Amino acid sequence: MTADSGGGYIDGEVIFVDPLSPFRNQSDVVVVFPDGTTTFRRMQVTPEGVFLVALNSSWPSRVVRLCAHTKICGPVIGAYRGRR
Image 1 (cartoon, rainbow, N blue to C red):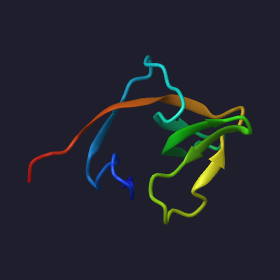
Image 2: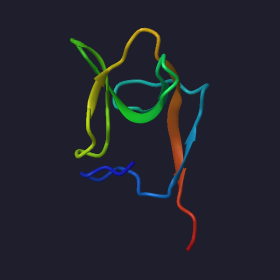
Image 3: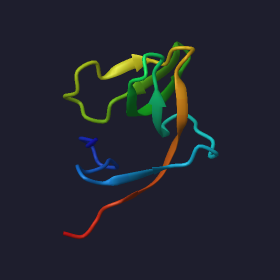
């Protein structure tokens, strides 16, 4: 869940998703693919389509196209980092 270029999240952070909040280009979203796989990525809206981009640049299959039957659970509205 980490982002290489700032503005990201650190391992162990808890994210809060609001299913009622609107999402748009550059929103961090939680999605469920038709096969039931759940992921957390950044949405990119381009003239070529809507894509989901993993924040970790070393993640395999970093960019995937948002398919028609993918459910967007909602955008991330906050994150919490517990005390250690």
